[in-house]
Amino acid sequence: MMRIFDISMPIHPDMPVYKDREEKRPQFTITADHPSHGVRETRIGLDLHTGTHIDAPLHMVEDGAGVEAYRLADLITSCKVLDLTSVTEAIRREDLQHLAIVAGDFVLFKTRNSQRPDFDFNFVYLAADAARYLAELGVRGVGFDALGIERNQPGHETHKILFAKEIIIIEGLRLGPVPPGEYRLIAAPLAIQGVEAAPARVLLIQD
Image 1 (tube, rainbow, N blue to C red):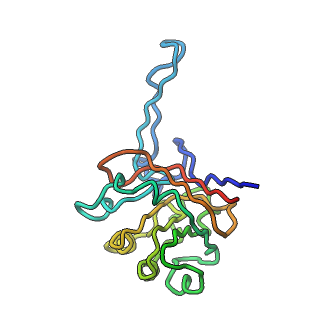
Image 2 (cartoon, one colour):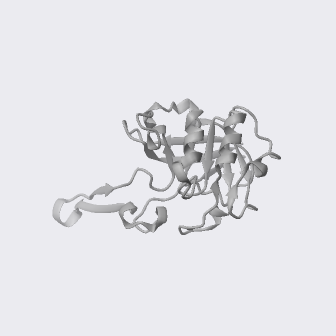
Image 3 (cartoon, one colour):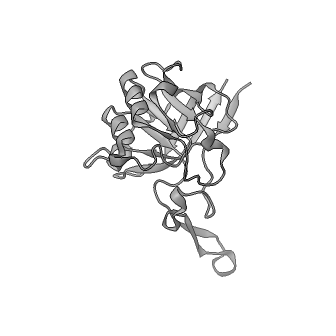
């Protein structure tokens, strides 16, 4: 029996946003409504790093590629969900070395972040040495269950290490109910051109 997990964050004005910053909160404006116009139309103001989203190199690299450079073939693929819920601070190289990660993998890290419905200022993040290990292995992509893959790291090392090896970064996943294992990943960013990130609907399928 096929199982489908929607691992995307719902977008609404009261959703968790990075560091609880009000300027990052989605804004919904009703521009037409039934009593006055006979229809409902809504405009949304949205930070491109809202909720579940895909980062592109332009986010951290001047003149880097925008999100339109990613091929859908790279975002509709097999993946591995790996359980790192025992990690309390940062995922480091030694936390990954015992896991079955090989070249070409697209890995999604399930941490204690997925257990928090709000923004946790002390969220688990991916340390630079772990990012370097994944780059050395040659993974294709990394999915993370916090609104950032790093937390106050000088120079944004984790992002830059992964981007230097053309590794895709997905942030803001919700992996709480997902058992570790192998899945089919469908990660479809909004088709916005010339930008450094895009919100995405992300699904996992298991036959």
